[in-house]
Image (cartoon, rainbow, N blue to C red):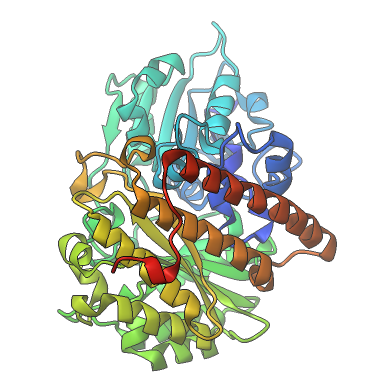
Length: 508
C-alpha cells in the first residue's frame, strides 16, 4: 500500500568498515576484485525488521523528509535494497532510486576501472534496477535522482534499457513533493532539472538517521574551481537549530561521531574579498556541534589547503575543540589537484587564497606540516588530464608528491582522479587513460598508488575503528591486494614503454 518507494544501491549503503576513504573502493573493477571480497570489505548496513533502511545516504534522507511535507508517513518508505520488492505493489506510484555513480563515469571510477572494466558502482546500480519487480499489474514510474543523472543523459541507451521514466537533477529539497505529484499526475517531462538554490532554513531536517552520521552545515564554496559543480552554487548555511535536530536524530541511532558535510569548512560564512577564513564563525560552529550532549567527536568532510598555511593557529584551535590528539587523528578531504602553479592560475586561482598562486607547492608543504602537527590526516585528490595539461605540469606534481613524503613524520592519503568535464569545463574532453597516458602521467599514478599502499600498511590503522579480528583480516587483504595492484601497474607501464623515474631524475 506504499505510494512512494525510495531505495539506493549497495555501494551507497555500506560504511566500508570505517576504512579511511573506503567509499573510493566502490570504484574498483568487478573483473579484478571478487564479489565475495568486495562484500566483505563493504558489508551492507542492516535493515530494520520491516525491511526499511536503518541508515541511508544523507541526500536520500533529505528527499524523504521533504516528501513528508506533501505525503503521509505511510505513503513513503526508504527501502533496503535487499527488501525493496516487498514494498512494490499495484498501489505504488513511484519507485525512486538514488545514485552517485550510476554508470561508473565519475572521476574515481574512470581511474580505478579503466579500459572498459566495470566498477562496482555501475555493477551494483544496474543489478538493483534490473532486480526491481515489474509486471502488467504494476503502474509505478521509475525515477532516478542523485549526483549521477548526467551519466544517464550521456549514455541515454540505458534509459530505455532500464525502462527509466524520469531523471531528477538538482537540489530537490524544497521541490520534490511538487515534482512527484506532477509525475503521479502524468507529466511527460523525462529530464526534470531544478536550478534553484534552496534557502537552508526552509529545507526540512532529516527524520531518520544517515550513513556515517553525516549532516551538512553549508552548501556551496565560493572558490570557483572550473571543474567543480558545488562551487557553482550560491553559498548557504544551515541554522544551528536545524543542525542540532539532525545530529540528535543520528545520536538516537548510536552515531555519536558527527561527519559534518561541507564543500569547504574554511569558507564557512566567509565575507572577505580575499576569501580569507571567518575564523570566529568556524570555531563557533565547531564548539556548537561538540557541545551537543552525546557527541563524542566531529570531522568536517572537506576543506581547502591554504588556510592551514595562512593561519596555523586556526588549525590548532580547531584541533582543541574537536579533541584531536595522538589517539584521535582527524580526517579531512582536500583538493590538491596539481603541483603546477600554471594550472592553478588557469583553472583554480581562488583555491590558494588568501595566499599567492605562485607559491602553491610551498603552500601545500606548509599546510601538510601544520595539519600533521595538529593530528589531522589529509586525504588529497589529484586530477589527471586537465585540458591543456603539459608534461611539465605533471612532473611538477610528481616532484611535489615526493617532497611531501620527505617531510618529517608526514601522514597523508592521495588519490588520482580522471578529469571529468563538469562545471565550467563541461563539454571538454574527458581523460582517457588508454589514449592520453604518457610517461609523466604514468609516474604520477604509479607514485600515488605506491604512497597509498605504504601509508595504508604503516599508518592508516590509527584512523580505523574496528576490532582486532576485522583489522587483521583487512590488513591481510590489503597486503595481498596492494602487492597485486602495484605489480599490475608496473607491468602495464612496461607494456606501454614507460620508465619509473626516481626523484632525482624527475625533470622539474
